Length: 481
Image (cartoon, rainbow, N blue to C red; front, side, top):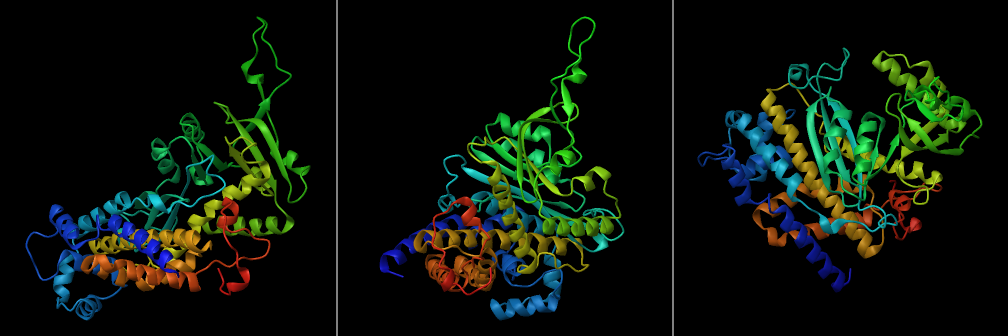
């Protein structure tokens, strides 16, 4: 890397450090700990050391033993703390301390300079994706973390996440019981939408009222359409009462989407520009229908049958009839997003699935054993702190790799690389923040060398769909995505 590039990298890394140091510094951590009552007098285990143990030690607090925790503190920080002292520290005040650190990181890390430039910038300032991930926890937590239902999941945790795809900024994170309703969360975040925001939502967040709210704010949306939602067109053959007034019940005529789909070739697209959604208060929408290929239909049938069997439910006849099509509604004009691009832009939602995959497979957020609930919560919020900091670094590195080298980073590879450095990052932040850019520069070089995205023939990447200008360099990248 040239001296100019190194200097620019140093400056951008220092800017990021200043954002993180608003929360992750010895003085600030100590202040937060005292404010919430976690630290009342100076003891052997300081607040920054406890935060290290729960978030950055590489241990699973509810899974690893107290002996392992004590040994780790002695090995990595050179302090001697008894297992009983650690057990006593894992209390409700510790939970409040970690929750406050988590909340502050969520709100204070702006990452305003990490936005990537895309071909959609003239239409959308933010591309907001919302989804949830859930995992089962021991049954002893079912009073506070009731599961989603059924004998197999009496207790579970659901994490709702909304983030801006362009900057990587976590906009909302909500932690609750597994039975939590996605639709309720979707309505809750509506008030934060602004003009030129684009919302990509799955079926769990489907709400005609929410779509109206977004439309009123000047925001855009693309959503899957539920198969059981009635779709109408204006009826040309209206009927009249004897007094000459139109019978309201004849203003609209319901259409049979399964019949319409028969005329769409496999892999084809059909747009219905003026349809009305909803049985009572009909909302005018743009409807785009994609017909699955035979291979896609076979895969979907297997998935639906597997899910229905697992949940002990039977899909309705109408749902099964519409299995061969995927339907989207949007308020974006076709001059901005043509019908053959709706599926592509909606597929950006899958970026959040990749993020959730890293949470579980790389950062092991779902590794839980039955311990006292305060100890479990310390692990949960410790992991969330780790995830926010790691994700902030990951998105920053992705942006720098694009700006400097015009290359695309793999989210999964980058997350794995950052995990190997995260403990060192934390120690540098609390001990020598002015030197922190050096470790970040090492991470950048490692991602550039080993963390670039592979490009499979015929498959568009995240950058391709967004129209980001970058170099593929397929031959130079030999690693799987």
